Image (cartoon, rainbow, N blue to C red):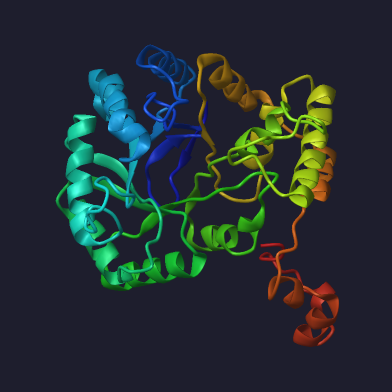
Length: 344
């Protein structure tokens, strides 16, 4: 395992993060405490130090397990958790991005983790009700109090993230150093705005669902399509997803690895500071995912996967990159310009 700087911070994190949404069985499909411990130990043995959880995961059990597992050497671990999602149904102030929920969620997470501080606190999702200034000032107060070391944001439009960090920089508040998004070969829409923004603002990207809700593991095929859950899709999307999965399986057979390892390797080789979240329901799945560290796709293999999975980025991206428009904005000199920002 190698290590990366977490975006614009100096924090060192392992090149794969362990997602712990599967730690706990309250939701009907997670791992028991002994199995969760085995996965934690395997990740630690591989050199991993970056754990990702949330206050809502398995009704708080995920945080409790993480807290137990790291207790012998708390300061070694980089622990990320999240707030925003509800923790008390029908109570309007026990959810959302506002300061009241932020503070109570942070205190509750600290208790479940058995820790005095959180290494990285994520805004779990934007609520479209709380002013950006309130969120950024509240998070900065938590950093100033020593309860949080760094802050990040998940599942939020690019314009909000960029505005938030501009305000934080102007005010001298703690900026977001990380961005968590859904990203995989079957969902590349983040390439329109979120990933270019992350590169421009030096944000670490920790994508979730890098296996496309299981579609990219090789377990689905024509005649054996996903029947339910996040992997299920409409007919056209399902056909496209299965075509992508077939290419992943073919390349895996060519390399001599598993389809999951190819899918994770593709994410790791993208042009951004990407630290994939790997999550598993059992030790064999996690071991398989960790095997992606030994897989390096060739330029030809990357091109093949790019071609089968490419998405239309929409306006204005496909407009301003049209050759006719480039000719207009450059006065015919575009191809003679050595532009180090090209392709970003």
